[in-house]
Length: 113
Image 1 (cartoon, helix red, strand yellow):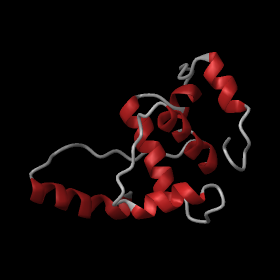
Image 2 (cartoon, helix red, strand yellow):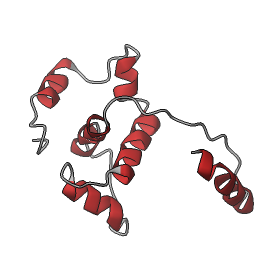
Image 3 (spheres, one colour):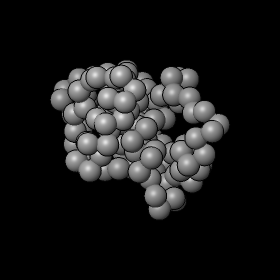
Image 4 (cartoon, one colour):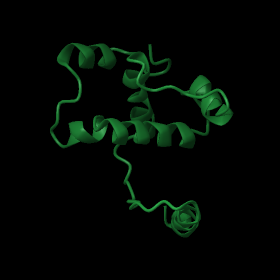
């Protein structure tokens, strides 16, 4: 984040945008954060444009893909936009209904199914 702060603010200034950018500390394991995308994709709340080839390749290769940064950022963004997710659960919020939480907890850790 610190490396991108100045270029991000400069690009926003050129485009006429002004909004605060806050650093978000990662919570938990990267694979666990990425698995939170399953809920969004299954309910059709997360869609990927075909031109985002790197993201699609990381999604296809997960969890075997060595690079997972783009998909991790997508998971964090989905949680922030929806106001739900692993961060809320850690704070004591109840994101998922108990039946859905049970379904997600029974998934295979390698395939996600």
